[in-house]
Image (cartoon, rainbow, N blue to C red):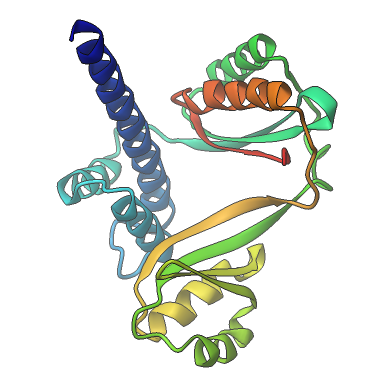
Length: 235
């Protein structure tokens, strides 16, 4: 009974840590959105997108509102978005997106995680060929005519639509993020999430053991408070 309790307790704390990390991530994104476009989501499209993402991650409304209010204060930390590129075994590339108020601390921590996990930093731009930046939107399919919507969104830069379990994944180019968001909102469509993602142009096959090692490194990086996202071209 004791071991079962300990296992449940460990699982509970792990879930809490993950949720706390997620809320911290969106708190930073809200801060950067407010600093760049103001605290009113009606006039700040970037903030509207971040709020939608935070809600889809079950971030409580009061925490979202508190983050917006806190970000409007002059005393709030100014976060800087910095991306790092790294290589690990067999040519697997990693792009590590961070939001930090102390770049010196952040790069030192990134180096530490990579050294312990079998990776190393690369020169900026060395992985430009390995990833494409895409705008990825998720909406609910209920009440939506997919064929009609597809035609409507072509002018907004639509590249692909996929339907998965009651949701629709809409992909556009990086440059068309704003126009696609505006096109969906103008049609009264609720956006579940809106993100700029890095999609690998090709993938690297690894053995199960090698994959586990890279996944461990990614998990270590994602656990860092300054890291927002980690992308890899591992199959």
